[in-house]
Length: 238
Image 1 (cartoon, rainbow, N blue to C red):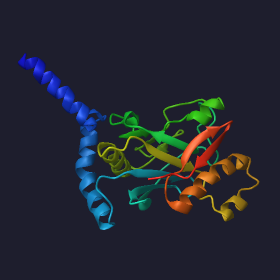
Image 2 (tube, rainbow, N blue to C red):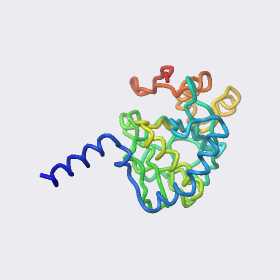
Image 3 (cartoon, rainbow, N blue to C red):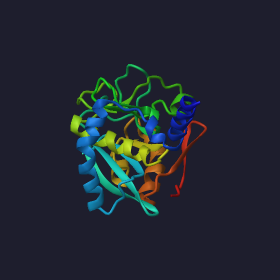
Image 4 (tube, rainbow, N blue to C red):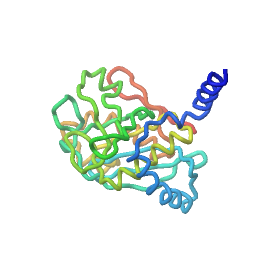
């Protein structure tokens, strides 16, 4: 009876504290030990919570990954990291083996963290998403990872992925159920759209712009769905 009670107690604690089920490793713990005190101080310096809810944007042309943190009824820019490498230039991934890095709107859940990655630490962005699956796009295991080498993924420095992975982990630990990740070819303002209007990917990029514009307008991640073979967006709420 005591052993049975102990097992029930442990299972109950795990249910109450889902953070205990987050993927973890000695490497990820070491990254948090170094990165989290620094990140906590930076969050506090910007008046942001140390129990973050986050939104991620990547821009290929800039070579930038941005982290935004919920602050009241909007999200506020926290910091950015240089993308060390991606492959295939502008234009989204379509099939396995095309060595292209994807563009679009993705969702990351806790089980997409890989603390035992061959590329130091990694986060699966969720390619192919629902739209890409409907279009018949192929390939998988597209990551944000370390080791600064890419054949379709978004590679960061190891120090960079230590911070980014830690932020994802801490957001999940604080109760965020999913993290939206938006990947754009460039900043989709009018000038860039004019610059790239003759690019073969332009018709696809026009379908990304409404989601980009919604966030630029209200600093709340858009609600993304699929209608037909295109993205559909509604203004998000916090």
